[in-house]
Amino acid sequence: MSLALHHPVAAEIIARQQESPSIVSLTLRLEDRALADRFQFQPGQFNMLYLHGAGEIPVSISSDPSSPDPLVHTIRDVGRVSHGLAQLRPRDRVGLRGPFGRGWPVENARHRDVIVITGGLGCAPLVPVIDYVIQRRSAYGRLIIMQGVKHSDDLIWRERYAAWDAHPDTRVLLAADVGGKHWNGTVGPVTELFDQAQLRTGDSMAFLCGPEPMIRACVQRLLEEGLPADRIWISMERNMQCALGHCGHCQFGARFVCRDGPVFCYADIRHLFGRRGF
Image (cartoon, rainbow, N blue to C red; front, side):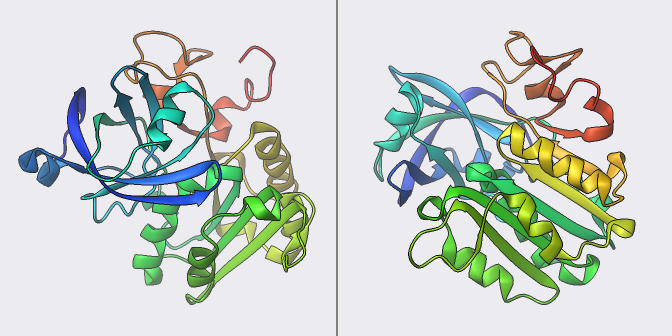
């Protein structure tokens, strides 16, 4: 039986991977084994990670949902709490609440092509989707993965992208605004990858996560390609503090990103998405 932990429980760091100078992946295991055995999450959901003396932040779960013990969280060192979390080492402990939010509609995408478009660290919330589809490869059509970064040196998980690209009916396309000396991908924004992708929008679903300007540009391109708005899903970032829709910090129109998202159907929010103040 699955559960959502509304109060922090102890989790031990069992592994740490420095992905880049500013990005670290922490592998956590709940200390209460009974809770660990019951813990389940949907691709796209997030946990709240609590560091004593620093505070609490939402972090997407970037591990395989079919193996929820242990849990992997990939964190960019950008603030007080994330900086503290990034300094932790194996055997250190954190508090964990979750999982929270609405995940990606992976079941609704069965028998369709799956288009995954990410920018920067936006790849982390969609790793579970990619793993989910690959493990059930015959239940889905083509898997198209498009990832963009500002500089080619910012790209993490290169070996993982290569492994995904080796699967049947799977294509990985990478773009960097600035390409380094040994960069073999496309130079330019992620929208430059659309012509290479040869999308079949008549029977596809698209999942997007990353900086909102990138998402807006890619959504516009998908619409121009003929993909209906109700088959475009995006993950949004806002100031989520309580994760329960109580504090109001992440209010988005009549919705709360922590409770009603972070994954939204574009057709439901297109009237607000991209508007200043929302």
